[in-house]
Each structure stands twice: as structure tokens, then as C-alpha cells.
Length: 297
Image (cartoon, rainbow, N blue to C red; front, side, top):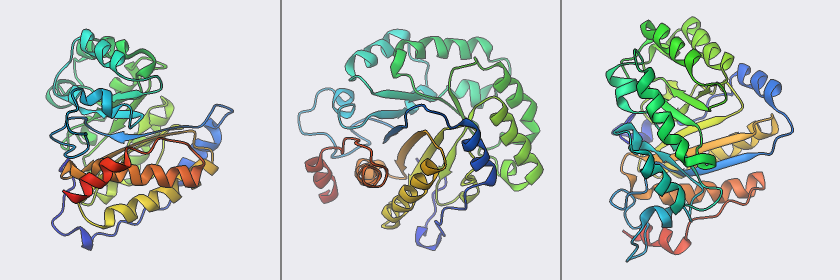
């Protein structure tokens, strides 16, 4: 993932901004007696991207990956609408408790820009449904040039989204965050319809670290810079997530990317260990022998 890549990450201030005051209000309103839920994973399971993660001779990468992590941010669906049978196969290959967080296709978000996409969206949803209880939040990532002038298209899309089906939205155009009035309208739209507002932690776009949650879900896309600071940044996230949990956060969905994906499993394992210690969770730490192998490559 090269979005937000910079040449000199050591010059970036990676401090996590103060939690937005409206986030605290949202958590107060939506916190209930449901169990705390946390999912941490990578964006892909392809061996070519996660170099060194798989033991030699691994024949089924998804089967192995899904026994090391409890989720995947399913980016593959951005490029094509896989048939229902493929989702059924993925369902059968993965253990109980595993979740997929699929991205809606680029024909919806980038080519048609949310206009006249009803049938296409329904096709994606129908196919996703074959993941059954393993279907996590569906993810809509809008083009970087999809700005506030397209607000009505986003509003219509969000209002027509099936109620009760979790959705997260990532807007990339800087104008969504530069103007307080525009930001307020955007955040309120998502909050009114219980749609998650994606947090993106990447070096070159610190404006996307708005720390404004719009429902009781922290959907976080973390992009490491292939730099030693990547680990310190994850340590800071651990402390912030602990704070948010104490303020009522019940759902954490955290996906680790890198500009060069080589160390994503290592970074994920580091975060998982931290979260287990800080939050009292018991997430599996990916195979430590394989982590050591990656670090030596």
C-alpha cells in the first residue's frame, strides 16, 4: 500500500491527535453490555506480498494465514467481484471465529462514483453473504478525487445501504477534513446511519487521523513506513485503544499495511502482543519462528 508514502518518514510527526470530543459522545451513547470484540490482521494473504511468513511447503496460504490471525482486510474484492462459490470456499477453509472485511469493488467507488450502482452493490452483497457469520464490516474506499462536491452521491449511498449490515467509509480527498463545516456534515451523515468512519494512519496524510468515530467501531488502517518508527507508532496505538476501550469502545478492527508489505506480519504480531498485555485480550500471536525468519530476510 503506497498511499501516503513519503521519502523521509523520520521527518513526520506521528503523534496520534487528541481524540475528537464527538467520539467520546458517540461512545457514551452507544456503549452497552455487549462483549468487547477485537480483530487484528493484514490486508492480504498472498505469499508474494507476505514474504517469509509462510513455512516452506505451505500449499494453502489462506488456511495457514487464518490460523495465525483472526481476520483479513479483503482487498482482492476491490479489483473483481468474486462469485459466490469462491466465498463459500473461503468460508470452508477458515476456522470458527475468523472474519473477512471485504472492500467494495472499484466499479462502485471509482468508476461509477456511487451513481447508478444499486444492482452492482446488491451483487457484491449477495456474494459476500456466503461468508455468513465470518463476514465483518464491508469497506467502501472512495477515490482521492471524490470530494465534498460529491456529497449528495455519498449521502444517497449511505441512506440506501441495507440497515443492520455493517459498513465503513474511507474518504481521501483533503477537503473532507480541511473545512470544519464540511467535516461536521460528513461525520454527522455517517453517525446518523451508524456507518464507521475509517481512521487511516499513514505518513503523508496526517489529516486522515481525525480521531472521529461515528459509531462504536474503530476501523483502523495502519500503514507502516518501513522505518523503525513503525513499532513506536503501534505502541502509541496500544495506549490510545486502551483509553478508548475505557471510554466505551466495544469494537476494534485494526489492519496493518506497509509500503512494502514484507514486515506486515511482524508489525501485526507486535501490536497483538501489546494489546494482549494492555487490554487483557487473548489474541493468538502469529508463529514466532516465522516472525524471526522474516526479520532475517
